[in-house]
Length: 383
Image 1: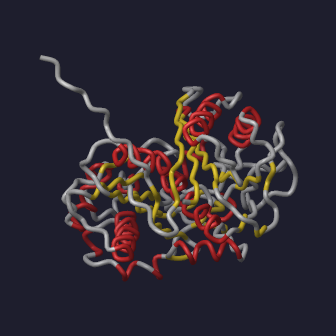
Image 2 (image 1 turned 90 degrees about the vertical axis):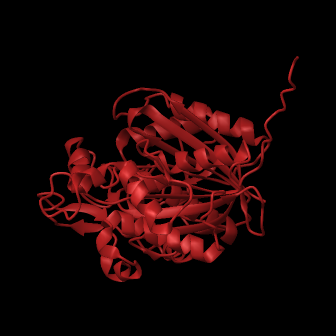
């Protein structure tokens, strides 16, 4: 006897809440207002626990947030930042912590700073990302174990994509909370320093005179649901591709990002993009690769910015943080300039936003790329 196979229901998924904690402050609205004021978090830092020379980076001051966490000694600094972001999202939106709530945490390196640190008050096992996720889950008593996502610098955007997929298909979850974060550590700084990828001043994404990136730290998150509310933003299309170009260098043809953008655009359908929130690390090869991918997709004329000149490169938080800021651009009908840009610096033109601009906005494209050739593109649209 043949059994009938029913197609799985596919739901639209919306972002109905967001949160951001960065060196510019606590809260998405405050962070966006600081961008509007052209405030930049990148400063010279001399800390021998990070590096033996001065670096330009963006660091969260513990003085204005560490007292907000209960049982602080039981959690690492990064775990406490995750907890604070999650707590603010849960409280603001009255999010249940029951079995119908999916929790996803994104990070590139997690508690890697614990490794080889004689000052560390936690066992080295806590440096494992699943162990970090489990500790955060225990704090809140989540019925579902938080799912960690770690895929280089697309981790934050990929976490949104994974949550969307799990909400769209199947009926196990009704909602999802996605939070991503990373902090400065000697491991991370030494790695980028060894690549000679760190700029000797504030970074200049897409600029002719760019010399490299600045590192930063942040935690940011979004609350997803299949039920739209006033002010919700729909995730209209997602595309992800790995071109496996190089362990650290991006494709010279932009192939992986090109395929990702095309996939996202095909899924989103006839959506006119009002701006692009680019990855824009300010390294020579990343910005060139993105410019080529945009040109291949016919997007060279679309206004674009990178927020790395404000926050630095926040690794596993970057896709989430920059998505949250772009959502607030939609809500405020304002294009945010790309800090540090003065002269066109890529072989293909990019329409870099240089001045705050008030205009109606409906949809944007967020791109991200990372080590190992990973790429992702996501289209968000006002409901």
